[in-house]
Length: 110
Image (cartoon, rainbow, N blue to C red; front, side, top):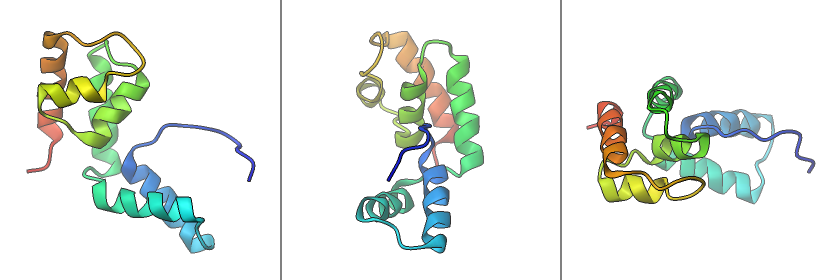
C-alpha cells in the first residue's frame, strides 16, 4: 500500500475515517486494531476535539504533536501532562502545565 499523505487527526476523526473504510471493504489487521482502539478510547467528538486543540494552540507553547497528544489523552494531572508532552520540544514549566490542565478540564467528560 502506498502512502499518499500524512496528517495528525484526533481519535474520533480516525474512528470516522476507519468506519468509512470499513464500509468500503475489509480493514487490514492494523486498521481493525486502530478502529477498535479509537472506539474504546475516543472521549470527545470531532467538534469538541477541534475546539480543545484550538484552545491549546492559543496557549502558544505547544507544538502540533503535543496538542494532539493532549486532546487524545485528556490528562488533568500535571505529571500526565508533562509525560504526554515530553517529546518533541522543550519541557513545559509548571505554569505552562497548569495552563494546559485548566484548558483540558473544561472539556473533560465527567
